Length: 260
Image (cartoon, rainbow, N blue to C red):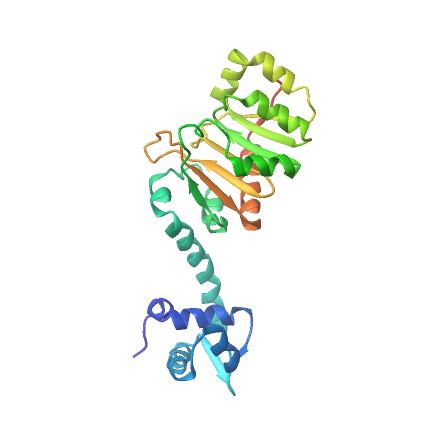
């Protein structure tokens, strides 16, 4: 009697690892044993199970995925990536709101790589993350969506202009109102630079802030009960930056260019 496919895929690391190994093409037995750090005696029974379930086919000690095997394995990687993403910081992801993400980007959340939760100290709470700060000074461009301002925002913008960093910043409607009421002169001066581009997003955002450059993505999410949280999520990697770019474009398309 055949096993359920889910059991075949996930109840043996050897079977799962072999399927993933064969994803990029056929392999001979010697290569498989070396890559999986295994021996023939323990691996052959697992290969037979995969063959019986029409996931792998082999001849003369060379094995490859069947068409069904390819379809199945193409779905395994995103699932494993998503599980790994959540596993690394499960308590954070499980307690923070993700409702602001469109379905297309939520489905691609596994593209976020090398994510760490940063818990700033009391003295760091009102300052920008140091790693992110150093990276955007050298990046040439910065993209931000925010509902709040750092107390030293004038110095931060001056630094961006001084480092010739082209900046696109989308603010919430409430923040725009505060800027025009409390910081009009400062922002009027900042906005004179052709490097700084301001936009307003007219709807509720559902998160505190989001920013990325060519190295890092930095997010501050709200808790599930919509309470403010000082923790920050810092992620890196080319897949992360591509995801971040698409996220920014999603909000930019409904934003309005503004003159302070």
